[in-house]
Image 1 (cartoon, one colour):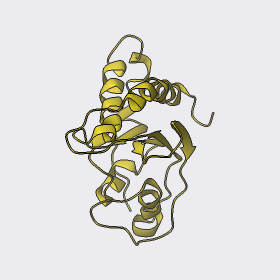
Image 2: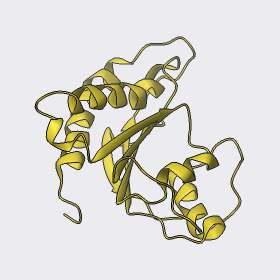
Image 3: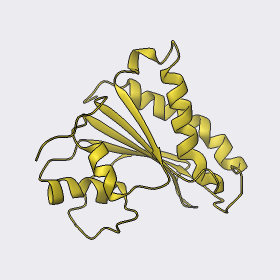
Amino acid sequence: MTMAAVSAPDLVLAVGNPSRGDDAVGPRLAERLQAWLGSPEGAPWAAQVEVICDLQLMVEHTLDVQGRRRVLFVDAAASGAPAVSLQPVLPTPTLAVSSHQCTPAQLLGLLPAALQIEPPPADLLAVGGEQFELGAGLSDAMSARLETAWGALRAWVRAPVGG
């Protein structure tokens, strides 16, 4: 299997629907990261990080993930989840994935199962949400958590690989 050409060794793959309340946290953090990478403060990491934002993870994202040094998934978590968590993602060895959406673990599991390549190290930055209704804005709780999540996201970008 030929590796896909990548524009940067690290990938931040943010998912969420900006029209569904707290589900907008992924796109908001992706926009903020792109702006930061274009600023003098973030410029040292700009060539190292590609940012992709989509409504949800789909099997097609295996092409974005393959060939990366590391990947960070960014997403809102359901009510009752920790406010902000950054955890490693281990591949789920299964091909039982919907063609329209999948979890980060399922997506990583598709690389060896379908493409015969090893997945890169990956983490999930999950931000606990409270309201996901169509047309809603960010909840007060999500607005407060956004700064903590932003700090975790920048720390991940700045962290040395393997560290």
